[in-house]
Image (tube, rainbow, N blue to C red; front, side, top):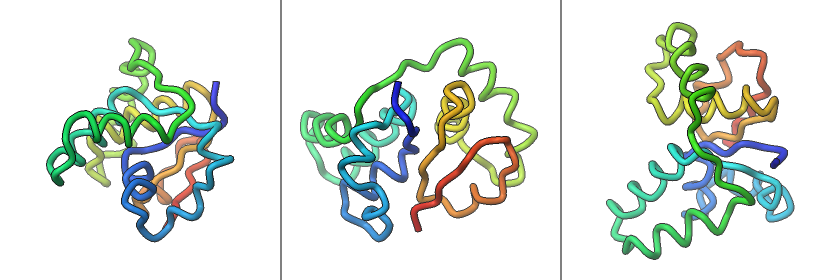
Length: 128
Protein backbone atom coordinates (compact mmCIF):
# COMPACT_ATOMS: atom_id res chain seq x y z
CA UNK A 1 0.00 0.00 0.00
CA UNK A 2 1.02 3.60 -0.53
CA UNK A 3 2.38 5.81 2.14
CA UNK A 4 0.02 8.74 1.51
CA UNK A 5 -3.55 9.33 0.35
CA UNK A 6 -4.38 12.06 -2.17
CA UNK A 7 -7.54 14.12 -2.17
CA UNK A 8 -8.97 15.19 -5.53
CA UNK A 9 -7.85 18.78 -4.90
CA UNK A 10 -4.24 17.67 -4.51
CA UNK A 11 -4.31 15.64 -7.72
CA UNK A 12 -5.88 18.54 -9.61
CA UNK A 13 -3.23 20.91 -8.23
CA UNK A 14 -0.50 18.69 -9.67
CA UNK A 15 -2.21 18.19 -13.04
CA UNK A 16 -2.89 21.91 -13.42
CA UNK A 17 0.51 22.89 -11.97
CA UNK A 18 -1.11 25.07 -9.33
CA UNK A 19 0.53 26.60 -6.28
CA UNK A 20 1.33 23.91 -3.73
CA UNK A 21 1.88 21.19 -6.31
CA UNK A 22 5.62 21.38 -5.61
CA UNK A 23 4.86 19.80 -2.23
CA UNK A 24 3.96 16.61 -4.11
CA UNK A 25 7.21 15.69 -5.90
CA UNK A 26 7.41 12.58 -8.13
CA UNK A 27 9.08 10.50 -5.41
CA UNK A 28 6.13 11.15 -3.06
CA UNK A 29 3.54 10.61 -5.81
CA UNK A 30 5.16 7.24 -6.53
CA UNK A 31 4.00 6.12 -3.06
CA UNK A 32 0.44 7.49 -3.09
CA UNK A 33 -3.01 5.98 -3.27
CA UNK A 34 -6.38 7.42 -4.23
CA UNK A 35 -9.92 6.26 -3.66
CA UNK A 36 -12.06 5.48 -6.70
CA UNK A 37 -14.48 8.12 -5.40
CA UNK A 38 -11.81 10.84 -5.51
CA UNK A 39 -10.57 9.62 -8.87
CA UNK A 40 -14.09 10.02 -10.23
CA UNK A 41 -14.17 13.59 -8.92
CA UNK A 42 -10.84 14.42 -10.61
CA UNK A 43 -11.91 12.96 -13.95
CA UNK A 44 -15.22 14.83 -13.78
CA UNK A 45 -13.54 18.17 -13.09
CA UNK A 46 -11.07 17.64 -15.94
CA UNK A 47 -13.82 16.68 -18.39
CA UNK A 48 -15.77 19.79 -17.39
CA UNK A 49 -12.61 21.81 -18.07
CA UNK A 50 -12.37 20.47 -21.62
CA UNK A 51 -10.24 17.33 -21.33
CA UNK A 52 -11.43 14.33 -23.35
CA UNK A 53 -12.50 11.38 -21.23
CA UNK A 54 -9.36 9.45 -22.22
CA UNK A 55 -7.05 12.39 -21.47
CA UNK A 56 -8.74 13.00 -18.13
CA UNK A 57 -8.42 9.35 -17.14
CA UNK A 58 -4.77 9.14 -18.21
CA UNK A 59 -3.77 12.38 -16.46
CA UNK A 60 -5.62 11.45 -13.26
CA UNK A 61 -4.40 7.87 -13.01
CA UNK A 62 -0.80 8.45 -14.07
CA UNK A 63 0.00 10.43 -10.93
CA UNK A 64 -0.78 7.84 -8.29
CA UNK A 65 0.79 4.53 -7.41
CA UNK A 66 -2.44 2.70 -6.63
CA UNK A 67 -6.19 3.18 -7.06
CA UNK A 68 -8.22 1.62 -4.25
CA UNK A 69 -11.93 0.76 -4.35
CA UNK A 70 -14.41 2.41 -2.02
CA UNK A 71 -15.11 -0.55 0.24
CA UNK A 72 -17.87 -1.20 2.78
CA UNK A 73 -15.31 -0.36 5.51
CA UNK A 74 -14.59 2.99 3.87
CA UNK A 75 -18.32 3.64 3.44
CA UNK A 76 -18.89 3.05 7.15
CA UNK A 77 -16.01 5.33 8.17
CA UNK A 78 -17.09 8.06 5.71
CA UNK A 79 -20.66 7.88 6.94
CA UNK A 80 -19.54 8.13 10.56
CA UNK A 81 -17.44 11.22 9.75
CA UNK A 82 -20.56 13.24 8.95
CA UNK A 83 -20.93 14.76 12.43
CA UNK A 84 -17.22 15.54 12.82
CA UNK A 85 -17.05 17.26 9.44
CA UNK A 86 -20.49 18.85 9.17
CA UNK A 87 -19.20 22.32 10.01
CA UNK A 88 -16.97 22.18 6.91
CA UNK A 89 -19.74 20.81 4.66
CA UNK A 90 -17.42 18.14 3.26
CA UNK A 91 -18.61 16.19 0.26
CA UNK A 92 -18.84 12.42 0.10
CA UNK A 93 -15.60 12.43 -1.94
CA UNK A 94 -13.87 14.42 0.80
CA UNK A 95 -15.06 12.01 3.46
CA UNK A 96 -14.09 9.05 1.25
CA UNK A 97 -10.54 10.40 1.12
CA UNK A 98 -10.42 10.87 4.88
CA UNK A 99 -11.89 7.39 5.39
CA UNK A 100 -9.17 5.86 3.23
CA UNK A 101 -6.51 7.72 5.22
CA UNK A 102 -8.00 6.50 8.49
CA UNK A 103 -8.34 2.91 7.25
CA UNK A 104 -4.72 2.85 6.04
CA UNK A 105 -3.38 4.95 8.93
CA UNK A 106 -1.74 7.10 6.27
CA UNK A 107 -1.41 10.87 5.91
CA UNK A 108 -3.80 12.65 3.58
CA UNK A 109 -2.71 15.40 1.19
CA UNK A 110 -5.21 18.08 0.17
CA UNK A 111 -5.34 21.62 -1.16
CA UNK A 112 -8.37 22.37 1.05
CA UNK A 113 -7.09 24.55 3.92
CA UNK A 114 -10.22 24.03 5.99
CA UNK A 115 -9.22 20.40 6.60
CA UNK A 116 -6.43 21.61 8.90
CA UNK A 117 -9.08 22.22 11.58
CA UNK A 118 -10.18 18.56 11.59
CA UNK A 119 -9.25 16.53 14.66
CA UNK A 120 -9.58 12.96 13.44
CA UNK A 121 -6.39 11.32 14.67
CA UNK A 122 -5.09 11.58 11.13
CA UNK A 123 -2.19 13.57 9.72
CA UNK A 124 -3.54 16.04 7.16
CA UNK A 125 -1.02 17.79 4.92
CA UNK A 126 -2.39 20.95 3.33
CA UNK A 127 -0.32 21.77 0.26
CA UNK A 128 -1.14 25.49 0.11
